[in-house]
Image (cartoon, rainbow, N blue to C red; front, top):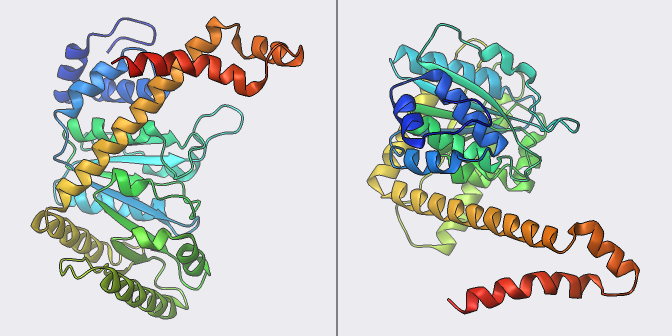
Length: 334
């Protein structure tokens, strides 16, 4: 794939990526992150090749052991001869806007063509996932990885976007940290398809499992009150010690069980529709924002408008209306 600033032949890029060219894969994701011109036609073509991978989100509070667990999952999937793509979402640097790699460095697996690990910035996105991360999932899926793992930032309160990008979401809780209560308050537990009590060899693990069971009962009761449907999924609780690999096989069994549930209940179609809707909305917002920025520049830029407001020639509301009204007129004529 050409470097930044060079012309891109979308068909050539897609052919190289589908042929397993890892450098092209890395460059496509970089172009997505940088919003490089010409990447959208590539994504449009790749989206037609996506939809086969098992996409799993791993979320939970900081310190719960997400990275170590992802590491263990990669080992386990590789032992099953499955290829794995990993997107490790990191907090944005307040200075550069880039990702803070942190302990993701441990997941480098040089020499194993069946594993691709990429750290990406959350870009300050509430919800934990940037638009670029969701698009990178599509790229890894199209590139033919059997499993795509998304490890979220771990802020613990706003990471609900992962449910729109992943087929199955595992929420990690560590024993007796108080995080379980905080997560419940934040609603993160509501997105769990599988609960994972990691570091289960620590004191208090059984009490944390008991709390999760109680929370699960409350959720089931609430769901039953709202709906008479009988195909609701009950999230299992799996205990793991990621540092030793204990419980990883049980976790994969639970993840597979949820995938089978989605297949049996047409859940994949529902998830796909939700994902397509989110993508369309995101693209609309991006295009409209770019259109408004262009209109703003034509009217002298934001500084020019501020000067006009300061001079009493207009006010902020009229200034905005003067830019939006022509766009509304164009849309109404269609």
